Length: 216
Image (tube, rainbow, N blue to C red; front, side, top):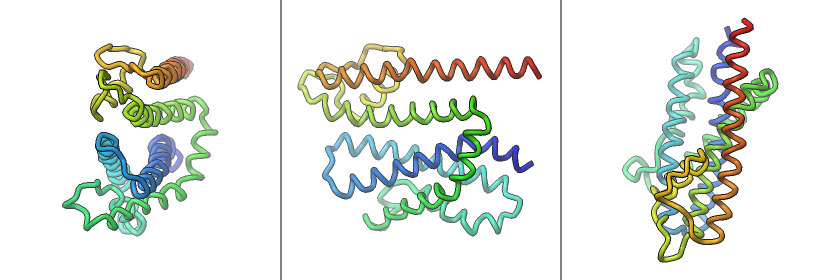
């Protein structure tokens, strides 16, 4: 029974671990540097999405916990870490340090994650590829906003950057948003190349899943 739960929660725990580290890095950068307006908006959107993931993770584990009171001894940390960066939900800038509590959950799940990745390599590869894709979308969105400073560029807002990064990594190439600077095209090339490899991994996982089901 415990092993089954571990399988189901493996990807989610891996995602939470990586997002916890990302949040700490963003908090440090946001504290030390004055970021451009659109970069701040992009990080704000990303933070709200991450908070939703953390809240979902908390609800799933709380629902599956055999003892709710025993779970809540550590679970309250996970619940507090799900508070988004909305002014009226935070008491000043210092209250944002509550995000540091997210790191505790990462350390507590490290052993589980290692077992998950090496026990089933196909699922581990799929989970890793999914998280790399998410991080590439986030960081390429930030990077493209930084380098596309030409007045004729059509990637100017956080929404433009996220949309461009998503259609680029999926190799769809919608064409309404595109980089015009040399740096932007380099980022686009890296993102497209990574997208081909990552979605090849997704395809291989789906194929292996069908083959294993057929054998069973």
